[in-house]
Image (cartoon, rainbow, N blue to C red; front, side, top):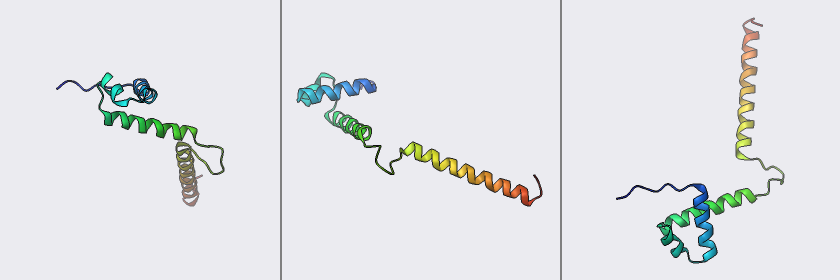
Length: 94
């Protein structure tokens, strides 16, 4: 059994686009010695990424998940800093 091939993102994109353009996915998979199921997995991933990239980020209430996480972590750090400051004051340390 041969070594597993590791495909770069650019290679995956090229193969998926070639399969879409040719309308003969099976032939594209044979050309690159690729399982049809793997091609469809890559295609689904590409479409999901496209959906996310084309999403309307202007609508009210939209927040990028990473930006949301940063806001939550900043709020948590702020609360902890406030609690430490209150504890210092209660213990007479200033």
